Length: 614
Image (tube, rainbow, N blue to C red; front, top):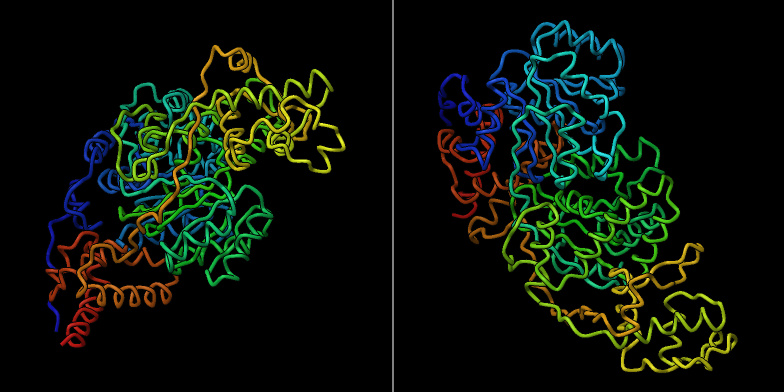
């Protein structure tokens, strides 16, 4: 026999909403200041990392202020899950988008006009429809929240033209406070967001971009699928994760490879029909241990908190994109991995894609700047986290939890090898008016008498065979780094051939030293701890029983498992073993609504576990 849910004070203040509705005892970081700013009617621009608690910064003000909070989100496919998650804690939320029929939209509109909604989600393109604006005119709006605000910036990585029209919010409803939020913004992106959204009078809140629970690792690409499989089987077996690939073909092949090797994986890319994409996304969100293999078409706004790893099989185009994508790991604060396989061909391919991209020279120059920053992160011999945070204007100390901290790379004088390589490029062009890619240049330096070398009579070149001090892989590493440093370039002939740059001359005449990175021989990196991390042995069994109960409950309700409870909350229950609803209500993440709906069932699982243990 369980006791009744504890009586909590009426919800009138942000802290009361936090405790009663969301089940947390204290705000984190700048949350309290941001919420106070919006509750008092002021505008706010919030830069906060994924998993930092951005959603509460507009959800709580919407519950405290009179009226309905209107959330502008680009994520139509995820609005249902967001509404379900809010409904699970007793918040009255709904959305208006193209997935609804006429009657469903009319029902939501009536609920809004009747003051029966706390939050209403809209896509930015819907606000451009006059009928939607007219509907909002007839109701009472407590605030506007502009989620994924970096989409307004052409300097950022997820530009959405529909976001450019959102300055109309201030023009049409000047007395309604606005809060714009993003997880990724350099100082340039930050300035553009403020300018384009007319947030000149907004208070700016910039949190630390650090995600200390994520271990950043970048390793040389040799056999990427096998490298990925090793990561999953040795460190993340049974974990949910995301694998990013550059092309649709690579997505399909990688997903099938993982399935063939016993890993439950699903593909996701724009070439799949919308029904298949929706089913795969739903399975990823609702089932434990699914690996989603995707292009960057997948992931923005994914709220799944227990993604234990994000892997990249191809080089991201920008640090902002990389940070946003890796930030989908470990939203629950538990240890997670950001892993990238990176090689020479990635650099050549990205350089060529920039040359062939649409847009003017300024656009290509922006893309090049993004890529240069990403290459600098890959090639650094310093702490990855220090380099990553510096990109966003944040100073930090070495973290001790990235690959370059755990197994430091060496820096060596590569001036002479660089001169040999650049000299080979010069001689081929001046003497024979020829250009070749990295593979053929390396064959010449190693003195390989391949059919192509013999056919072109390149054994007669003075640089033939002068590079045997390095292995083929070491030469490939050297070429990659010379490209990254701008001492070599990819020709615009579309074939990936290599040419000199203006900076090459200073290397050839000896006035510039070239420092290169030598990757250490990787020992088996300490395995990332999975969902049971730090759990006492006697709590592990209860944690697994709670996960099984959660999976059954979520399946019956047709919602993602995390909507019921997150892993961190289940861990708290497993460790404390509450025997009453009052005790259960003190655990982080257990609010009044969830205590009412799930409390008895959770206590039953805890009780059964105690009987089994006895």
